[in-house]
Length: 126
Length: 126
DNA sequence: TCGAACGATCACACGTATGTCAGGGGTCAA
DNA sequence: TTGACCCCTGACATACGTGTGATCGTTCGA
Image 1: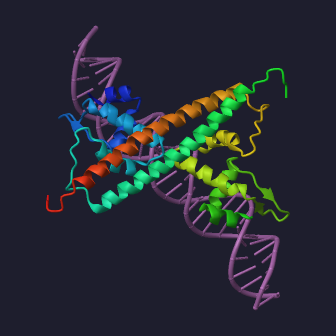
Image 2 (image 1 turned 90 degrees about the horizontal axis):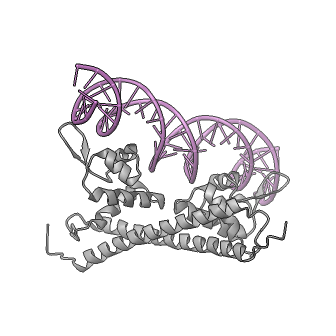
Image 3 (image 1 turned 90 degrees about the vertical axis):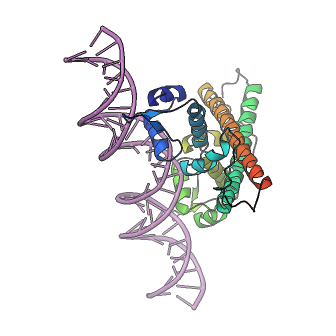
């Protein structure tokens, strides 16, 4: 598919798809006329990128963890340098912290909503 | 405490503390000379703000959910308008999505790291 | 063959979180 | 009183994700 279809299927502007490519998050095939072409896998890939961006990870980090998520469980041992593994561990821990922070606060918001709804007293003006 | 101590205890620059105040995330007492003063509660409050920012929430949203997290379980019913409750529900759901996305990807990174470490073969050059 | 619809690149702009610096005042101990 | 150190405000700068527009080439159906 070309960029327009990928854009529609992922709800992501063409501009951003080109930006993600520029940042090395996705790679496209080019036809002779220069048009970008993508296969089905890119739909999930782009949605994954958007989710991670929305969760606060910068493209620089996303670029590093994406190779871990490729479907074929083929691990590229050669390019798994100790430094890269350390970086991944660090990012994994940072993601865990984010998760815990989000859970804490989401639960607090939930508790608040529950309390408000339970104690709803329409007869009280103020 | 004054802004310098709060800054040190939260690892947050003075500049940012003032910015958070400007955005309505925190409120300070002022002494006659204009200095900001904070009590102990602000240490946790600031750390919470930083966690949420790091998790990808903008100050606009953080400002809305912070009142839900105040220690005294005093719910301010009067200012809990239906619109605000709807907004909170929406944000709660968005936080849940973020959490799920982060967990999925964190687990994938973990699995990658486990695989690499398990299959470590120091004798293989390439 | 023309025009609509799509693609490409490039440049400028914006919002947000953050850094940094300038210019000025307050506090306090030597 | 001077100097070190804290605070204030305001302005400018930067990185990053994203929008928008200009200008141009490609494709394809009417």
